Length: 253
Image (cartoon, rainbow, N blue to C red; front, top):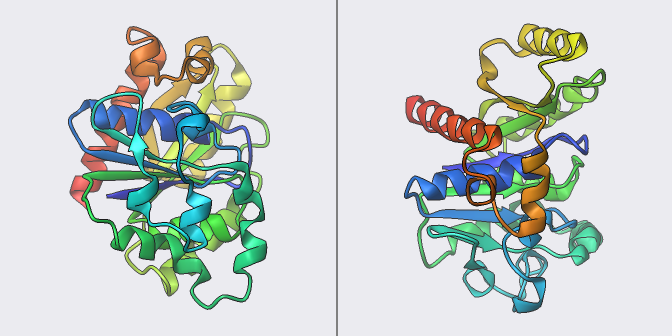
């Protein structure tokens, strides 16, 4: 399974979800590759020291290196990272007009010399070429939505993009689900937003809620997932439950 974690809105817990879903699947014994397509490189920095890298996804997407050449071990067993860097921000300038531009990631994955049970693709908060590459390469897409007043703003554009990808370049793409993040059980607003998201997306909404958590915010600074930084925390429990749901949903496709 190849799961693209995407939402064009920033600050919705997208990278947090990519990091911890990948770590959770790795903890379950699945050989997991976390592919970082976000120029901010937060998924990368949460796992490895940038000084230790010999290549990045920028090199892969430009055709200068293969995925095999840049992949490094992550912060725990069964987890590997395809790292990003800030140069990814200028990648689209180089790829505009290239006929194979939307397929660069898919082609790189298909040329991999080793296999993985799961691939998690972290995307930038845009609907540009990097996100399109992730959707073309993915088997499933997971959409994190923050439980806030403007939660559903822009989701029509995202769903339209997903539908366009499904129509032609990736007819096998499936919507895995919508994940509500940063949920504050104490507020009426959060409950109202949850009800609205349930109304719009129905059964696509995961049963698991990711609540606001200081531990989740701290873990990247310690170069660790929530499972190693605070294994007894509510965040670890919630992302463990999400892993269970993801595996169940993928298995039922």
